[in-house]
Amino acid sequence: MRLTPFAKLFIVLVVVGVVGVVVYHYGFLEKLAPHTQPSASSVPPAANLPGDTAGSSASPAPGGSASGVPDIPAIPKEAPGCADRPEVRIFGYAWNAQAGVLHAIGGKQATRDSLMCKHGVNLKFERKDSNDDLAALLVTFAESVKKGEKNPSGGAHFVMLMGDGSPTFFAGLNDRLSKLGPDYIAQVVAVTGYSRGEDKFMGPQQWKQNPQTARGGLVSGVLRDGDWNIAMKWLADNNIPNNPDEKTYDPDALNWVNANDYVEAAQKYVSNYCETLKHKSTGVPIKTCVNGVVTWTPGDVTVAEGRGGLVPIVSTREYRNQMPCVVIGIKRWMQDNRKTVESMIAAMLEGGDAVKSSDEALRKASAVASIDYGEKEPGYWYKFFHVVQMDDKQGIPVELGGSSVSNLADDLQTFGLARGSQNLFAATYTVFGNIQHHEYPSLVPSFPKWDEVTDLSFLKSVAQAAGGKTGSPDLAAFKREDTLKQLVSRRSWKITFETGSARFTPEASAVLDDLTSQLEIAGGTLVEIHGHTDNVGTVDGNQHLSEARAFAVRSYLEEKSPTNFPEGRIKIFAHGMSQPVAPNTSAANRARNRRVEIVLGT
Image (tube, rainbow, N blue to C red; front, side, top):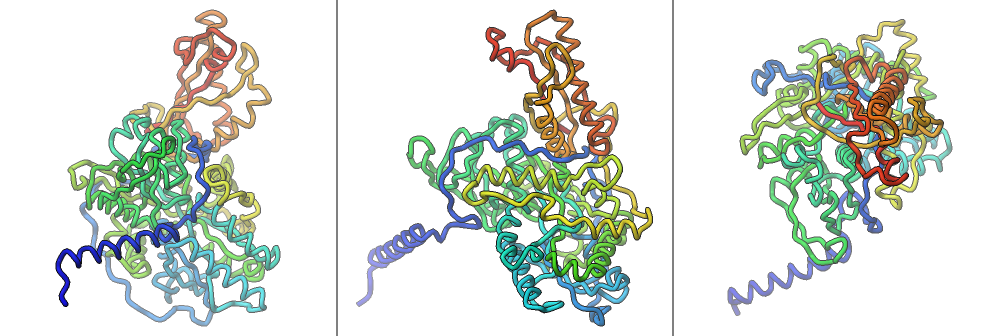
């Protein structure tokens, strides 16, 4: 008997319905993050990081446009160049911040004339775009070392990933590894480069013009990932709540759709993906569609070319110290193979110096990237190593791409080992670890302290062997005449002063340290310090007092971290009693009016 068209349709609908119930009931739609207990929407804790400036290392592409990508010669296939040395494997994402490493390797495995072979390291790179997979590889390796294998053939000797996402990574990983013994935990030993523009929070133009209009938005991204962190810092700096529960909708907060990876995050916007979510307060179902994305290159290019209509709200061009590419290995093996680790780091940072100083080296690294990453032409990786301005599918100009690589001088700056520098990694790690804990306390109940997951002894030995030949660090540069034209954030800080004075109270110390870290992270921004007072006293007296207090904050920052607050970055504005945020009719209101506002912009 043949089924009628109506009967066929009925059967299809029944099957789809059953599948849908099973998928929902068993949670197969859960993505990267397991379901956690719904939390109330709240403003994320401030993300205070070490920073530099608008003169970011994410420089425009040659010619300042997307055109003019030079021909890049293919990398010939050849056998490993130093196969007589033990194989060392390093796994990482497809990321231009690793260009110095790829240049140093010369192919998928260290080639004959490579920097790696020159330093006696038979390093092999393999791509892996999942933190869970990277963690599993380290566990496999550590377990083999524990069994007595001197150089295990399975797992990963090293992995590379985003430093601002490493607190969550270490929280789960080292808890497991510590069961093998305290010498088997994973630790950071170097940084190969930074994202300097390519990782970004993208949304409608009105979100950039007025951050408060982002309330009620629905953003696609990988939760607790580095790009998600960008949005968290931006929300905190603009006092906008975040809704950490993907199953509800809060019209007063930024809402999220989880994605498996940065590519899917972009594709959800391009395909106009929508979900029906329960209103956080009323429980009424509301259909809402993705109108923002957190992603990195090539995800941002997919958004621009596939649909368009979104602009970078903020990126690692402004938050230039947020996202280092960290190198992580197993403590016991690294201690037992100190010479190999130091030689690998030296070769990596020499590769970074070559890419920084030579277009030919960058082209070579881009050619290696196309082989090692298994996608895109060499010209693609070359082109988007720089920040490139293009018109999207709707004709809107957008900035795409942007990375940097590190030499030895940069790593000394990153870890606070250079004169006048602060430990930028420690600030990044701590700030974003606190955010991840605050937003998902059941998933990230705690995370190790930064000094537990860092071993700087290898880098110090490399620096000592270099004898002062470290290369030039990539520091943000500002001009005295620079003025803020594009707002990034505005936030009040409760910095307390002695009565009628510009001297800080003892209680101000913790707030000032937090402020320093936040501004260090946002190293690609200009900083405006706005001083305000209540109405107690004279107009002229309060005007002078607000100015003196603003100058006191600037002096603190510049003395604490000179390389991150160079001349020209900080501007002072004194308003006295002229801009109260509340009527001066009570002690509580007057306390609100005695404030320092920090405005960030480009």
